[in-house]
Amino acid sequence: MIQVFIDEHRRILMTCLDGISESEARAKLVDSKTTLLGLVKHATFVERVWFGEAATGTSRSDLGLVATPDESFVLEAADTIESIQDSYAQAIEESRQVLKGKTGDDIFPGNRRGPLPVRWVLLHMLRELAQHCGHADILREQILATRKPSAS
Image 1 (cartoon, one colour):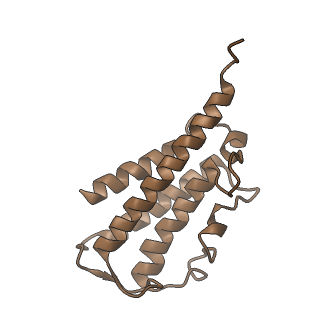
Image 2 (cartoon, helix red, strand yellow; image 1 turned 60 degrees about the vertical axis):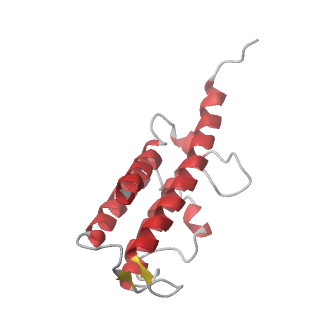
């Protein structure tokens, strides 16, 4: 069931960009680095940390990842809705492959905290994705509100 909930939250994050323009996706509406496009880029980082680094012990630099979660929100000029969604879809598929044949009791040895059971990683992913889906919902609501003609 947890993987069903994780997939639902992945879908919500992926589709938060539907019908949004490139400039809207990059809109900075809060004081942090959080943007709609940045949230999906960060979710890609999270997938690769937990199902790459934690699962295998491969370093973030060897995986081509930035060092910190905060850096994962930074958008490059070449980042587009399509490129970020494609990267996220690929990261999700890689995560699914890593999980094939695993049970919640299996151990991912490569986390900075030390070895962790897959069950812990899945629960953490669900919490992380749920939190960011909430962020995305609020940002999307703000963006769509700016499109409405004023009621004067």
